[in-house]
Length: 285
Image 1 (cartoon, rainbow, N blue to C red):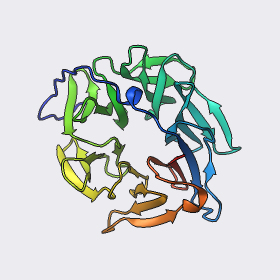
Image 2 (cartoon, one colour; image 1 turned 90 degrees about the vertical axis):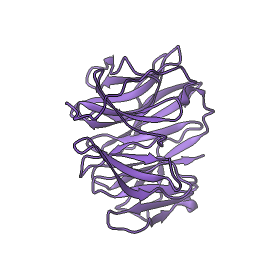
Image 3 (cartoon, rainbow, N blue to C red; image 1 turned 180 degrees about the vertical axis):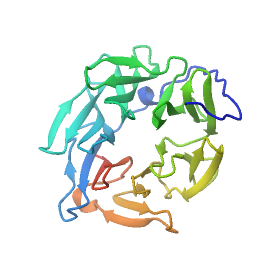
């Protein structure tokens, strides 16, 4: 993939305390919501004290990948929706975060924190269990998402956090600065979605390389940090125990559900299955 770039970013990254490795990690649980059965209580699929976070559905929607911390070590686990089975995927000396299906491959990309506390982008081949480092010339990487099969969007440390679109060492585009951690590809337009924190309220914006333009989509819900988008173009976010959605023609966020009766609180990250049937919600313990 080639970019029509107005400028190529030349980054010189100085060392900074890794965001994932240094922060005091609180406890979270992951709940599965079946939108086809609204009277059924959300299912706690992590059911584990401590850190369970960053859910991502597989391309088929049959599994949910997530990161889980045990005894100071973070690895990747999966939840099989059919049969309600939990399985550990990685058991390495490094810690892995942000499992993300790689487009058009049976593989997961993820952030690995190595023994030197470097945060690097790696890939795990799900067919044979082999590993390879995807990017060797940029770190520390905080979060990421795939813009296309050949280009990945990177949340780069240190502050002010930068959004970099990366294809190879010669093709790197600085998209924005002072961004939030939520990065997504718009399933209908192909735009890169991110949170612009340069003004209050924070704004969800969309960027396309074809026109190199930033388009305003919606204000982020007040007090929120995270959002996601489903394959039908619906935006999703949480506030407390409440889940909100916003369509392209909506003038404000609409309440989807209140899960306070089920012990869910302070919803942060959200993932939506490809068919929009299931939601994976991250709740504070």
